[in-house]
Image (cartoon, rainbow, N blue to C red; front, side, top):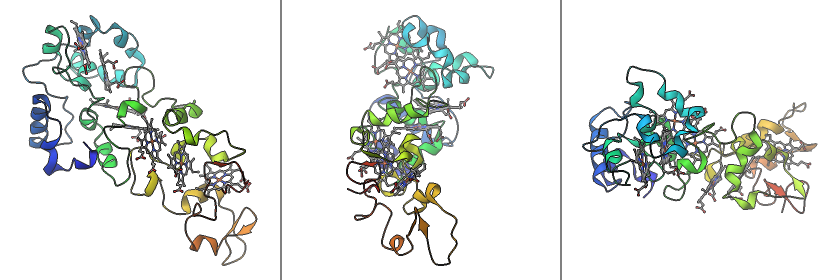
Length: 257
Ligand code: HEC
Ligand code: HEC
Ligand code: HEC
Ligand code: HEC
Ligand code: HEC
Ligand code: HEC
Ligand code: HEC
């Protein structure tokens, strides 16, 4: 299964259970930008309080979650909250649990795409995290605190989210690249981009956002005390022979291997 198989004509290939079949049919029929919670045959909304009977561990921390704010507005306020992501819960609740009568977004991002429609597009780009191996909840906590792990003021821990899977980029390096002290998302968009390695830019503009110097001589491109005008025509800044150890180096302070 792959996000890239998701273009409209293939929609019905997605999923496999009756639940998803029905949800997808209704998605195709209605305007896809409509914010509708997932559908589960025969089920109605029971409200988040009902879930608390059995899922205290989840509901007790939910009040400060980014998505808890979704519960507060509208006349049907009790109908959103847990069920905006998990679908109507009456059948699941009456049965005392089960996995085929409730939506689990860890297995399927459709439920997130309904509201975050732009993310469907980003994950369909040529370079994105592979569906099936990486789900939204590997990087986002829907149940407590900031949905962007380490978001806000704790930017260093935002990189922790990435490093738990990408050990190779952790370092420590003899020659650190200070750019990594900020955040991996300075250079990568983890949802997907048109560029190789999910880079935000495919050329030197990625690096020049921090390394641009005021130029004084026409035709020169001074970076760090050297004229790069001829270099940047040969490829990217991280092309072999240049700064290929872009995350940090053990051998060379100019970030070469
Ligand atoms: C923003 C969407 C969203 C909302 C709102 C939400 N959940 Fe979840 N829920 C998820 C995702 C995503 C997972 C998968 C988590 C994972 O992979 O660790 C999940 C998993 C679960 C699970 C499976 C066990 C577990 O923790 O992995 C339970 C139970 C659950 N949610 C209950 C609830 C309850 C109760 C509420 C309301 C208080 C709620 N959820 C609100 C998205 C949501
Ligand atoms: C009467 C108890 C009970 C109630 C009420 C209840 N659940 Fe559950 N739920 C369970 C049990 C038990 C499981 C463990 C999964 C199983 O049965 O195999 C579970 C599992 C889940 C899962 C994980 C399913 C999976 O395996 O992927 C989600 C998500 C979930 N519940 C959400 C909800 C939501 C949302 C509500 C409120 C609308 C709710 N539950 C109400 C008992 C309950
Ligand atoms: C019912 C609509 C709805 C669903 C379903 C939904 N979201 Fe959201 N989400 C929102 C809204 C609205 C906000 C903005 C909340 C705010 O800032 O007050 C938000 C915020 C977020 C943010 C944080 C944005 C920020 O800047 O802090 C992340 C990350 C996120 N959602 C991920 C997810 C994931 C992952 C899922 C599926 C598990 C999901 N959402 C399901 C409506 C939804
Ligand atoms: C590999 C990690 C990763 C995965 C997988 C991931 N995200 Fe994100 N997401 C992030 C990070 C990191 C940010 C913060 C972006 C930034 O700092 O520029 C973010 C930001 C967001 C935001 C708020 C800002 C924005 O770009 O609109 C939303 C909404 C969101 N993600 C939704 C999703 C949904 C929905 C999925 C699953 C389909 C998903 N994300 C999967 C890492 C991830
Ligand atoms: C749950 C594990 C997981 C998390 C968390 C994760 N990734 Fe990944 N990442 C993967 C997998 C799996 C691949 C695909 C690897 C492959 O195809 O060789 C990948 C691929 C990539 C690639 C492209 C590699 C290539 O060779 O094309 C980049 C760049 C990347 N991730 C950056 C990030 C960033 C930045 C974050 C944090 C916002 C992050 N990842 C979080 C698992 C993860
Ligand atoms: C200064 C920009 C920049 C930052 C910050 C950055 N990367 Fe990269 N990353 C790159 C470039 C450029 C490449 C492509 C290297 C290549 O193709 O040789 C890359 C490639 C990758 C790859 C693919 C494997 C590889 O080495 O080619 C992964 C995985 C990756 N980055 C993860 C991360 C993680 C995790 C973080 C945060 C800890 C991070 N990156 C921060 C620029 C950056
Ligand atoms: C977020 C800002 C930022 C970005 C983006 C960035 N860098 Fe850096 N880089 C720094 C800082 C800060 C230093 C350390 C101070 C200095 O030497 O300018 C540094 C140092 C370096 C050095 C070592 C200079 C030396 O000889 O001491 C090289 C080489 C380098 N960066 C290459 C790159 C390349 C290649 C890219 C693009 C893939 C890039 N940088 C993107 C901030 C950034």
